[in-house]
Image (cartoon, rainbow, N blue to C red):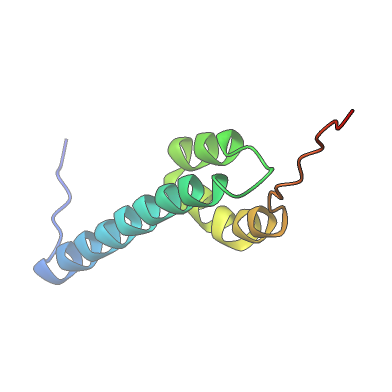
Length: 83
């Protein structure tokens, strides 16, 4: 079996892409948790998607989920029964 040799430039590019993916993943997880506090939408599906598919899930969350979670804000509207 022959090993594939990469140049230093290729290794630096792959390392940079790896760190961009890690930062995107962590940012998505933090955003999901932060936005779930003020949203009616459950964060569970987004958390599962982002954890199972870090790059694709993060991109989908930032394109679709973040907007949906911001639009479904909770409102404090208690109905007290005054007899």
